[in-house]
Image (cartoon, rainbow, N blue to C red):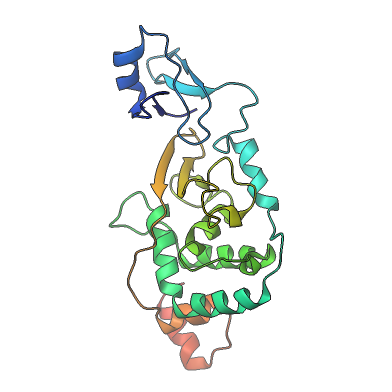
Length: 234
């Protein structure tokens, strides 16, 4: 289910309240903003639960948890070792920026941390496990978004969620293949399937602190570094 839908002709995005006010008496089928398939409205059965948009059976939309799992098995069709060396180096040089971007997308409040560094390390480990670095054409611009989608459900967050790309995506390299899929990512809240669309735009600025570099990369530390690491409460 979702709380927003698109008008089938204008593609105007409206929440459920505005949709019912404008179109309840008209036979117009709302569209899902992610998969662009028709939705229907499920009326509230109790005052405590609001009306919402629902997909028809077998829609295949990745905002439905069982369909999200298709992202878990994605692997590069062609292993690009040369680009992998380049993107790994860029990641090391810009690690804090990538972390900050992922953190900002996970956070519900821009003034509060959403993703801790332990969780980010898990994201990096899973990317390595799934050979994400070897995607042909992968650039730093797309890396934070691929890391988020590849990770799966963020159960540790205050409001559990996961991230998906355009429903037409069959492999991550569809993102940077011109005209293949929409350059957007959707944040899906796990417990109520509410959906938030986000444009892909890698624009952050900061530098990585030494203790963070040691932690994520697992580099050996001396005792002074370990003491400093503990002070940082990671």
